[in-house]
Length: 298
Image 1: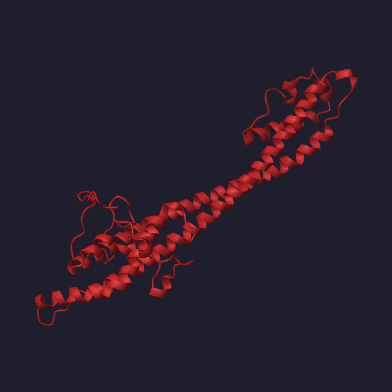
Image 2 (image 1 turned 45 degrees about the vertical axis):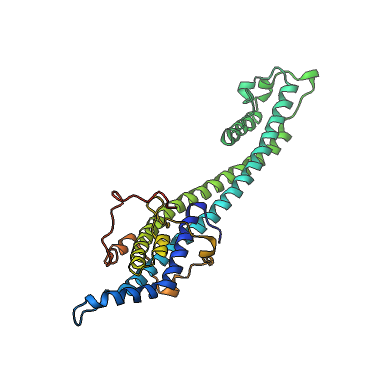
């Protein structure tokens, strides 16, 4: 299966299984049910258009699946990129920490009477990235002051130490780290935006899935195919999935792009599913508040 986040893997497997069953078994079930309806119809009365309605719902479901997986793939890729940026930033943080710790040891070793508080050298080298960045900026700023000699005090054996070369090694890292922070923050914002987009796409998919699964379950039971009906029955505890998890052999491979246009699917929202396609022609929809899932359901 293509790279997807773990949160929708079960949904995708159930949806691919349901769409495959609908494509392969839907017409057969419809003919069986149509024949059973026929004797009870008045002269000239047509049986309910079960197949066309199921096909329409199937197109909406496939479009919802396409949207959900497309957003999820973007989220997967963006989060991988964010992780790479985080690792790159951490390399700079570790390098900066070593440089600052070394500079502090050198300065305090040569100037035992240094006024550490005024030089920003008091305490320990910070480990937290933002704190280390601010601490390093302060140390560089203090060591560049014209009155630093007063704050450094007397050198050991009167051997003065020029901290400038050490500061020059640290400042480029500060610039790169600041840029790395900004880049990583931008990646995090993109991930957060995609999470919101994915939440909306998953909600639309869940609505579409339960519509198709319930009606196809009804069709299978009317046709006497109770085993298949049990397999396609929607789960009440896991939205967007079948109650019984399909076996690996029952789940078609997910293509790189879910080709919704092959079945004439259009963009779908939850509102689209409430407009004339939500009421099953076979039974009223059960209420999720009063219906519980059997204990042997997957």
